[in-house]
Length: 486
Ligand SMILES: [Zn+2]
Image (cartoon, rainbow, N blue to C red; front, side, top):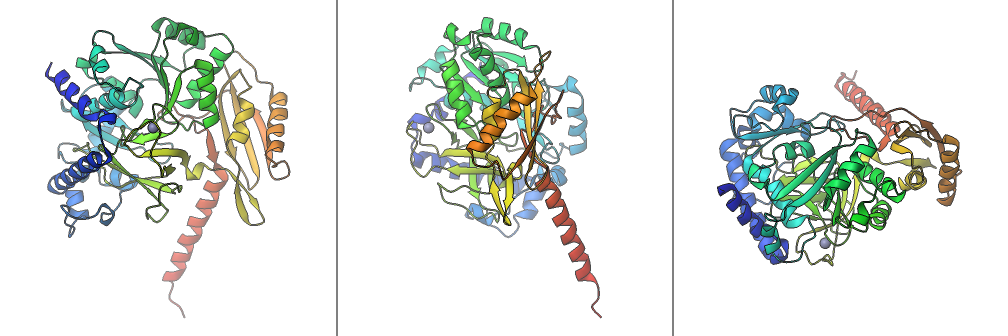
């Protein structure tokens, strides 16, 4: 009961339409100072890194940034509970029996995907874990601008269907494994595994009658195709209020198409295992709102200098204001984001992310007279919307102007590669790129997945080989510099 009362108080505090930008700024500032003081007092790593800086008065930009590699290298001295050791936690997450168990009776543990390099371990206390759900209730769902409907949920529970690949320690699944017990009467959750047969999932979904449907873009699009083809009747049931995309970039065109098919708003969230409540999808329009009282999002260029709203950054720096046991301060994430320079029409006082482009190393381009010109992902994506027997796809850049499209058919289905090639060439012609790029299409039985079960939809293998060559060159140059000059 105490948990529920505390939760209700948190909801009240989070409800966005009662806040003003000034209140949000004050809360952010207070939480930041408390976090910095806690980190310096209890984390040997931060005490060393912030030596000589007055954390009570410094500007955020005065503090050094943190990379994933640094966080994992110094994990044992970065955390503020000395009982936490990377090696022990690694063993803990290796055993799936531990999923949903509290480490030392106190901490939820998850790990982020290693698809962008090494995986990271994330430790959070119960309060941080329940905050994930409080933010869902207060900010991520389209409800009337009144607070009381939340309490009514205890009599009439919210029904949320979550599409994941399989249970595991990756953040989106681990969060649900730590779903607070006191919330169970107010929140019914249906887990669907995307690797189960589609017919089985459709049956479960229809009888559950979800109000909220949350999943990766690829899974949502697959269900959209089923509904559009009449094999699923979720829209006719009239239950669905909102669809939320998490973890994979969703194009505006795909979001609009899903809204048309399901007649429900599609919200797009931008978050990560290191800060699960970084933003909530706008409940009326496109984009997401930064939960600026719980986290700080800095959009910066490649040298960590801030870029103004309306301009796309090269990466972001994330400060998690609510995880005290593993302080994450100015954490570098290689995502390209644009903040809005105008207030959002929905009326939220929280900063509005208008565009999420994803990771810069996942961009596609071709070389044109020594210049790089971007090849938009939708050139490949739009024709694939017509391939109804498609389960998954991947676009790989393999050379300066060469692209490979890998297509995985649904179980027991076949993909007509010749037909896809024709549609793809038409899309490329419409974009005026027919002389610039070469596309190969192949049907494959499966695609490699990261630990979270996500497929990298866009991969630039050519850029990676160029990067590797460049770093070998600079290592060779550095070695040469050390040679004595005769
Ligand atoms: Zn909005």
